[in-house]
Length: 365
Ligand SMILES: Nc1ncnc2c1ncn2[C@@H]1O[C@H](COP(=O)(O)OP(=O)(O)OP(=O)(O)O)[C@@H](O)[C@H]1O
Ligand SMILES: [Mg+2]
Image 1 (tube, protein in one colour):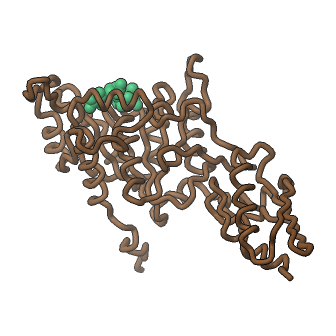
Image 2 (cartoon, rainbow, N blue to C red; image 1 turned 180 degrees about the vertical axis):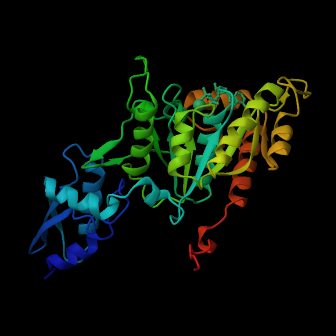
Image 3 (tube, rainbow, N blue to C red; image 1 turned 90 degrees about the vertical axis):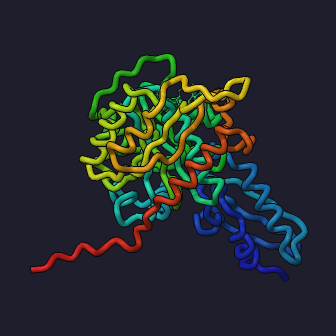
């Protein structure tokens, strides 16, 4: 006869879609009884409104039915107690600070996307970069800490979706294989927000400490323009972050872009390169036009002594894809803007410095 233990062992193959671990490890499998060919299993969901209840239950059923000797399954839905939930959050997300989670010893690479001026394409670049890195097999998180001009939920096609709180931990929604957190998920788009420094600082900390991104390889951070409170808070918490500077070819944009990069550098962050966005426009006759002038990207790169990682053309499909919530990089690979975005992703990957060879902090004497 089939034993409850063999049913439990089989359930190790069921992965919680949000926490991405076997449900047996997460303490979600309760009592199991087997009577002749019938199995009865208690599944303890993390929260009563768990959005993935149905999909987990159908995985559990299919898995148990594949166990030899089992012909019938009863799933008893239950919810974890507060104590069980805290044990779970402690297990997978133990109360660590942003510095522990993303500090120099962590394996997660943090990439901050900044600019001097607003509206130059930071959010568009951040969203496509995050999705492009995920397409290359990395596990990726994307955060948008732009209180006044958040746009990542719309760009990723998840407007209206909310994170799921599980005890003290927050589970981010996922889109295009990226875990996404945005201030926009917490504030009403039609209400004015006037947050001052300390509130922004707490929010940055919460986004980095309380949100469970899982074991991500890269965290892309879409920052507000300029060198305001958010950039400084992030710089204090993650001084070893890599910074990508976005500018247009215009001289005025280039001047302020340089300034924002210098502030990042002052905080210890590594500027890995410049993205020149809205670079050229190819008109209907095939002629390249420099609508926003030329040379801004090269100029910022020269002054900072870093490479131009990519030049992204002014592109209608790029604008449309953002409006539709389908980052262009998931679409037509032959589009010139997609080619440029892929070049950016490859260039960013090439600048990765693994943390493994970091020297140990040994002091002599
Ligand atoms: N290369 C491009 N071609 C055409 N449109 C673009 C391009 N890059 C960005 N856009 C469009 O320009 C607008 C501003 O882009 P985006 O929101 O990414 O800029 P931002 O720097 O994040 O702005 P903000 O400073 O407000 O956060 C958006 O409507 C976007 O679709
Ligand atoms: Mg933006």
